[in-house]
Length: 371
Ligand code: HEM
Ligand code: HEM
Ligand code: SF4
Ligand code: SF4
Image 1 (spheres, rainbow, N blue to C red):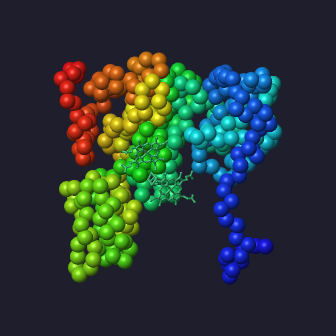
Image 2: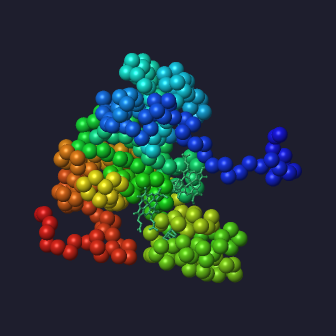
Image 3: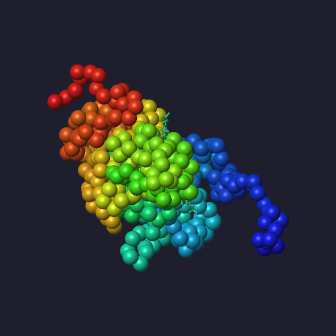
């Protein structure tokens, strides 16, 4: 029976949860589940896992744009049907992995993937994303779908990956480099824990639509949304509204999230900040937050040249200078942040000095530093 709008609860199915992942495991994975002995990276984008029973599974990892059409997904399914008995998976960084159980099937799969291009010339399925190199950029909605964005997601990611493309397909870095992007400081995703992070930021306080604010917003919610206490309830021309203390506002946009009558996105005001040195793993050093090193670069659609340049400068200075296994944050911590700024040539400005609440611990309470 089709959906009946006059009887919405009839035949309603709910709380069934996701499908059980075991329904979709390739047979070789199912047979050897929990019995893997070791793995090797055969070449960039190609892995082999060997099980206790001596079975092998070969994985070919290719880049995905994350945002994709059903047409593209159908093409992925066609490839999986042709080479992988209909099985395929996505990674936690939105790469796509095709698996085969026989080395003989590997080459035809890779050759098939390599030759597929979009009409504009971009590779549909570039191989890579493994080992100590570059992998996909975890990113968000941007101007495509979110109302709180200070920058775009898909556009910036495409511009950055185009420039760094060669390193998606090779493994010559000291350690993994994780780049991520969030289009506002809700930070959906991983910007606060990535080697390099691109973050959409505003530079102007919200505009207040006094006319309709009381109708549109729960005023106490907007007041409580502000991390710096910049908002207070106010009566403006006889109407209930809010007043923003611009001196206290740091343009986080959280009040707009709560209250549609406080928009703050601005063509010149909004742009991106760059953070570096975060990591999530516990390998050698503990997980780290990324730190702001570039306070602002303008939005420059469609290719964001200044943002791309800054990222290249940071990334390749690290690649040249760091020791094996050092993540970007490990490297910066070892050489000291003053050396980081010296080597990358990035200007250090007052914007980078923490001034939020217990900021004190981020200042230097030591005479140990390098001139
Ligand atoms: C003000 C708060 C938020 C609003 C209004 C919002 C709104 C939305 C909307 C409209 C979509 C698109 C849904 C669709 O495509 O049909 C979406 C998708 C999504 N949101 Fe949010 N969101 C918010 C906060 C967050 C946060 C904090 C996170 C991170 C934990 C998040 C993660 C995501 C993800 C991962 C998607 C799917 C993206 C994809 O297409 O791959 N959102 N959100
Ligand atoms: C495994 C993934 C993640 C880890 C390990 C992680 C870790 C952390 C940690 C340790 C904090 C500091 C908490 C504190 O100050 O007490 C934090 C804060 C935060 N994280 Fe994450 N996080 C993850 C994923 C996310 C995601 C997906 C989002 C996007 C919605 C997110 C958004 C935030 C925000 C907005 C804060 C600041 C919260 C606040 O100060 O009120 N995190 N995260
Ligand atoms: S980071 Fe901000 S702007 Fe981007 S999708 Fe998340 S909430 Fe929206
Ligand atoms: S933008 Fe952020 S800091 Fe400014 S008033 Fe709104 S909530 Fe407060």
